[in-house]
Amino acid sequence: MSTSTTASVSTHILDTSAGRPARGVAVRLSALSALSARTGGAATWQELGGSATDADGRCKDLPALPEGVTHVRLDFLVEPYLAQKQADAQQDAPANRGSGAVFFPEVVVTFAVEPGEHYHVPLLLNPFGYSVYRGS
Image (cartoon, rainbow, N blue to C red):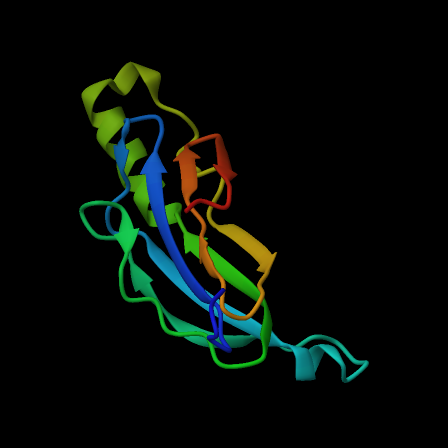
């Protein structure tokens, strides 16, 4: 059993339409503490910072969570990545042009955390769907 008073978070993105990691996707990390949840008013999310996925689709430098965090939000800003993929595909096959709009401009994942636990939250992404899960 861990004695840490904070949880930790990591993530990666796999582009399931290409079968490879999604490089260069910005990811923002926000937290909600037990104190802000108990105020009775609207929850106030604190943005802690962010990162971008590397060539392996991983964010290796997400900020640490402060003590007392009960909920975490990962905001994956996937629109630029998907728009570039769409532009590349249209250049290769102009007859298959779509509307040009990206269906999912962002993917927001919110989850509860416990002190001392590590949460790895992979995003499986394609242009018209996504899936997330708690990994290891």
